[in-house]
Image (cartoon, rainbow, N blue to C red):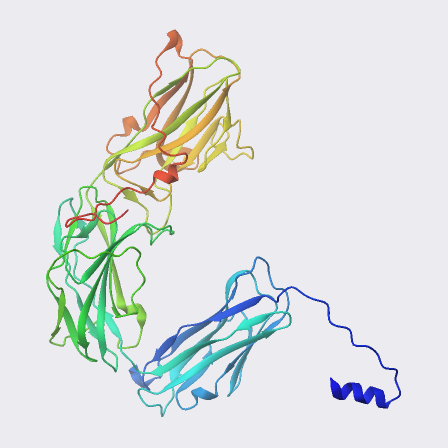
Length: 501
C-alpha cells in the first residue's frame, strides 16, 4: 500500500485521506473434517492389484444461513509421493480437478449443515514401504469467510481386526438360550495392544453373563431407527493381538430371549482399544470374572484380507415365536350443547411381546378414530391427522369426521398409547356412536395384525350421550400428553435382562 501511494504522489495527484474501512460483523467460520487417520492395504494387495481405500472430506456450515459465495478447496498431494496414489471417486458433489501435485475443488455455495467437498480413492504406491506415513491436508478459502483446515494421516499397512460371523439360530421361543461364539482375527500388518469387544442387543434379547472387565449401558437416546434404545456391552480384552493370528473369546457368552422377545437384533464387533464407539452411561459390575481372548489355530475365512473397518462388525436378526395383543376399550362421554370435553383415545398392548420395526422405521400400528355425530374436534394431539369419512386426506386438521394416529416404530410390552383430544358438543345427539380401532396401516384405515392373537378386541365403540345416561368408563390413563413420550418400555439391566429400551 505504501508503494502505491508514493507512485500516485509522483504523478502529481492530490493526496487523498485514507478512510478507515467500515466495521463489519465477524466473518463466518466453516470447518473442514475428515478421518484422523486412514490405513492403506500394502501394495500390490489381493489379486496383485492395488486395493483402494475411500477417504471423504466434508465441510460444516454451523451458521443459520447458506453462504452464497464461491469457495475453493485445495489438497496438496506432494507429501504422498512414494507413499500413496490418488484418484478422484467417480461421482463428486463439487467441481474437482486432479493434477500430479494437487486436488482443487470449487463450491458455489455452502448450505447449512455438512456436505461433501471431495471423495478420494487412495492406494499404496508401487514402491511404498509398510509403515510409511504422510499427511494429507485440505485447506479452503472464500471471500468473506474463514475456513478451518483438516489433516488426515495416511499410513501404509496397520492392524485390521475382522469379526467372524457366529453360527446362530434365528428362530426361537421366549426363554431360549444359545451361545454367542466370538472369533476375530487381525488380518493386517501390525499388532494391536488391547481390543474392545462390543455386543449390542435390542429389547427382547440380552446376555446372561456379566464380567468385571465389561461395561454395560442403556442407550435410550433418540435415533431413527437402528440405534434407538439398545443395550450396549463393551469389554476391554487386554494383551497384544498379533498380525496374522486368529483369536477366540475365552469365556461363555450366552444370549437369552426374554418373555417379551419378538423381532430382535444383535450386533457384535471388535475394535482397537480407543477406537470403539462412544457409549453413554457405562457402568461396571461390582465384581465378576475377567473375559479374555486366546489365540486359535488358523482356519479358512470368508472375510477379505484387507484394512477395512467395515468388517469389524457382524449383525444378526432373531424371530421369536410370540404374540402381542393390542386392545381398545369402549368409551362413553357426556356433554351438553356448547360444552367441550376431553377424550383420551388410544389402546394398550397386553403383550406378552414388544413389537418394533427396527430396519424400516415404519409405524407398528395405527389408531383409527371415528368421531360421533354432533361433536367437533377442537384440539388434535401430535401424531394424529384428520381425514375424510372415507379415509382420504383433507387439509383441515380440526373438525374432521375421522382421525388416523400413528405409534412410531416401537410398541413396548404392557405399553399404553394415549391420544388426548378435545371435542366440542355442538349438538346433543342421543346415543351418537363412533369407534376406535387399532391395527396395521391400510390406505383406508386399519386391518388386524397377523401377530395379534385376538382381533375381536381391536375395535371398540365410542358413544356420546348414551341412551339412559349410560356409564362413563375411565379413559386410557393420561400419563403423557403425546403417545411418543410413553413409547419407550423400561429395560432392567440384570443378569438375564432383555435389551431394548
